Image (cartoon, rainbow, N blue to C red):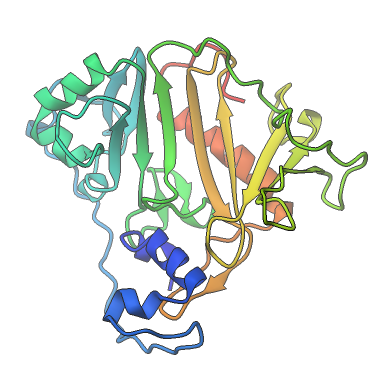
Amino acid sequence: MDKPRLAAEGRIHRYAAAFGILMALVTGHTATAQTTVILPTRPEPKPSTVPVPDGMIVPPFERLPDGRIGVEIFGQRIALPGTDDYLDRIEFYPLRQRPFGKPPTFTLRQALAEPDKATLAFEQEPEWISVRFIGWPENAPIVLGRFDRRLLPSVDPGDPLAITIRRVPPNKPPTRGTLSQYWPPEAASTDEDGYFVRPGVTPPHRKEPTEVGYRHPAAQRLWPTGVDLVVICRWVGSPVRECGQSQRTQDGRISIYWAWDEDTFRTARSWFKNYFPKPRWKELDLRLHEVANHLLLNKPSGELE
């Protein structure tokens, strides 16, 4: 079973597996991690390619010449897929504005249905808004209109593809291509894949750090940049580590992030296969750069790196 099919379950399954209570959550009965559950098969729904009707697209949104839906947030124009199978798979997360009440996020469908509320969030949010892709359309071989789904990480509400736009740059933008100065020193030489490994801080009552950073020299990335590639892998409650990467502008105003699993893993209910081994991380880095260029219409002030 592929992870995108389980977007609605997302993190629940990871944490449940880690604590051995998956079946308690699903059925109300306790079970161990060795419990075998046979699920009935069901036909997969076909992906929809029905365009969102033009009548639904009103300011602050616009129909773009290529059929996508455009919206401007803090001066940055973003192009969103223009078919109805993305309406509930894209959400906006303003930090402080709550025009739709709870939860703090609202979907593209909600924004198109009540554009005045969406405009309120876009215009009055004082800090930042994150545009989050929380699922790929089921059985769609191509996502975002141009990318082979097999070459991109899966996304779900717990692990979205997220573009975060700040109204103004932070006072002290984080330095790109580096890890926390509070972490222990990195290894003097690279590992077998060409990464300098740097363990994070080991918390109390643990024998090893919960995070490990991997730095790859800029000259060896697959696209021209002067910034090193940094990937951080961490334990988040599942049987394997989750690894993630971000690219951001030099002023820190715009960033894009996604994550993947260090390996495949099973739970009593599911088999998660959002797996990209370390030799493929440079490929993911290039894909993230291409995705950012595809979604961000006007080039940000300072390249995303």
